[in-house]
Each structure stands twice: as C-alpha cells, then as structure tokens.
Length: 63
Image (cartoon, rainbow, N blue to C red; front, side, top):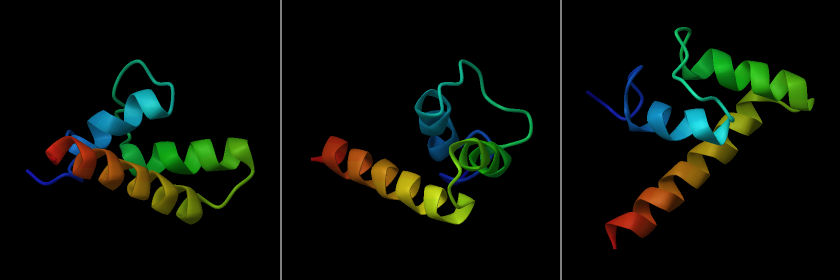
C-alpha cells in the first residue's frame, strides 16, 4: 500500500482536514475537487497545498 492508495496515509490524514468524519467512497481526488469548487479555488492548487501540509507534518513527526 502506498500513501496515496484509497486507504493510504494521505487519505486518512485528509478526511479530518476536509472536516469529514468518515472516509469517502469516491476517494481523495474527488473530495479535493469538491472542496476546491466550494472554496472557489483550483483543485490542482488545493491538492499541492494539502500535499505540502501532509509532507511537512510527516517530516515533523519523523524527527
């Protein structure tokens, strides 16, 4: 399993970040698209912002 699989580390980190109580059956990509549309921002930009946050938190936790 990789970090970006449906039940991978990124998904599990993302759900609370998007204020979701449960995992999404449609996956993290669709949920980022929905959140970006609701916020009026680019889905791609939101993905990379979230990815940066995810990596920063993992790096900090690994130290």
